[in-house]
Length: 253
Image (cartoon, rainbow, N blue to C red; front, top):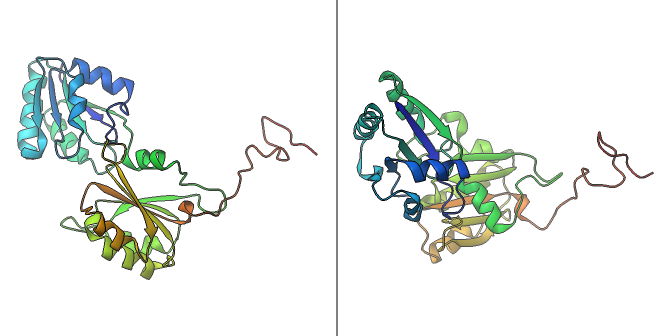
């Protein structure tokens, strides 16, 4: 079975994994999981003789070597990534290396933490007439971001924003968002380990969120959600407005 399966593990809750992902995980002969981020309870779905590797302790070459050996020996290999593999999953580089070896791969969609966070809070990123766009981004750290994707430039849109991998620099994030165009009273939510048993949600605004986050001792594994979609102002959509006509329903006159 010269094929590798990249599987999205979901945001944390072991039940927030797709049925397709669960079936693959339960049949896998080899699982390479992102140990620093993936809930280890998901490994309970694996069969007893499944060989499990923690990629937090491995480099790219070691990961590819395990995949290659598994594929060449007709083993079902699952690469288990946190959330959905398409967001900050470092999948491209693994896929490119597999192509060089002539090994096929398939990606299985997962539930990203920004979706898990929204579900935990019961919120919608796209509130009619308040925000109809969502920017998913991060600030530069040891890994840079393109110059045109600086936080201040995105902030100029003042739309909904989900900021990954940046809570350790919450002071800098807040300052740069305000410099970019958000008002200091713009509501903010910091969601620590969305959907995990020890999930924590900190609410505030750009002016005070840094202080609140530090008081809670949150330094990693948290999302920063920013925008007026978190506020008290909202509008009902036209979709279910009885006076609104669309393809499937005539509005009341």
